[in-house]
Image 1 (cartoon, one colour):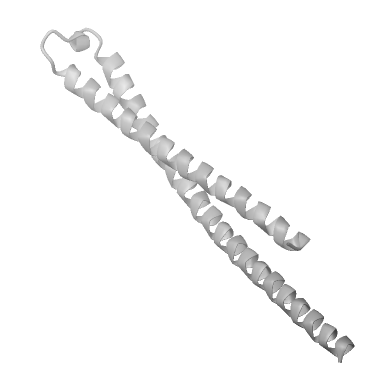
Image 2: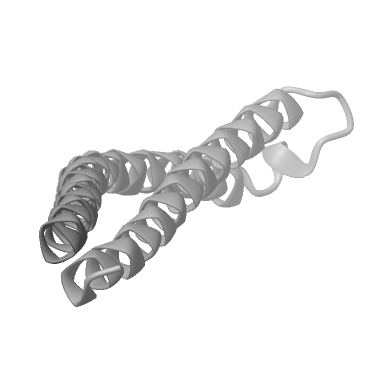
Length: 127
């Protein structure tokens, strides 16, 4: 394998790892957003529940609900940014994989041509 092909093979592996990292981070942000939204819904449901302390501390409940909703929005924005990075990483991975396949095919052609030339040379030296 030629040095260029070996470098491209390593680069493909790194790009795949980077893509997997962005996928994982995207999913983590989506999960955090969903969890924050659930927290806000649970707090809102508890606000009107009988026996709740919301009558005594309405500003605390409202602040915690708004904080949870803000956290959900922030995580959704982070997930969106991560999705853009994931798309870029996927595109780079595809480009590097294509270059690797082309380099590997070129190496194989070169080896076949060298083998044929060696066979022709052997026949000429015999004849």
